[in-house]
Length: 547
Image (cartoon, helix red, strand yellow):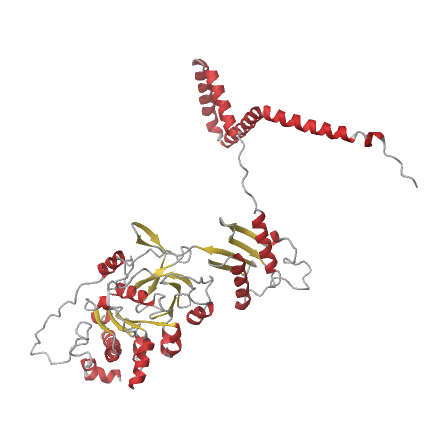
């Protein structure tokens, strides 16, 4: 069948219609350019009128009459002054032109590159958040990412800095393995080299991922505002703790959130275990704790590595001894065990007599043991007891006797730690680069952040008892005798160290008083004459009670 030709108006008039439309568009564009100032002023007058009407509607009725009177007085003044109406008209037109100017529209959604990145994240999560028999899956290949991903934010390079993921209710978010897979996937797809924080809301089936800022490393050793029995281990995120302390950061003073470890008779975590990699900052933290402990107590330092990292504390007031050899370490720990027993006996007698505990039992005693695994190897080779065996009494009964033990070792020596040390060191710190499995092995819980491959010295995680795992940055406390230490940090540490030992005042015994052995106090316990035979300071009655 032959095709009938189109009507003439449709075949020959299409060109004229197209030209008419182009002419109309050109005329409208020219008119808009010519009338643009007028359109701008009219838009501004409309906005000013709307703002004035909203202001008038929000004004209480009792204040409207005074406002009308004030406006009428202003209009009268403008009319009476020379060129007043003209100036008023120019002012109103200028304000309208400024108010009606074209503004750059605010960005309300992700750009093309950001949309592609969100779609890639959505597609990567589909295998983990979907099942075959789901009638209306929230995650599906080729689906709409806007239904599952929200609260997104990007940095200047287009990488995700915050993301909220809504997942189906059947996802096993209570299992650690399932959550770890999602965290590792988001970490890999969002960009490595940054530290991410994951907050799981099991009730609302939501996961919020955010990028954490690096903890400041510029805070040096200084006097922190703490109460007796409180030790600042380092500093963490602002929203992780509910307390701040003033610190000096360079030339400024600001408030920083500290990680405060509480010791003493009422502490639930009386002893601390520090584990780290070589160069991770374990010795720095031990040195910081020693300087803070000297404010209210006495310390006994035993260094297993023998590198002289604590030489700056030798001979200082409150420092009972700094031992590097095996013989001195064993003698010091043996004295510490007897001193713990003596304090328990003295405090028990005072309570039975209705008196308060003696002053020498209330002064805190700190035992700082660095690298006990090295001393254990030396003791085994020499046929002597492991120094950790002598720590059983201070670890088990130290809280009641105001004796605190702090131990530091490396990851490769964790298997040499005794069961007593593992059981009674409920406060734990991990420093240096470490995997999630290593952190969980020490702290008993995985962190809610992704460890970064490159960390500064003193950077790690801390957990006090059954509390959450917090990020930690230890204040810079280097060895002031080290040539690599900067002058600022060297002077900061030296200013915090106490002066030399206070001389012991000689006392004349009273002939009427029966001769008994003096109590073993921190001031006369570890002298060169009695360091190896400290146990003779206990009276026979105390020795029988302790046995």
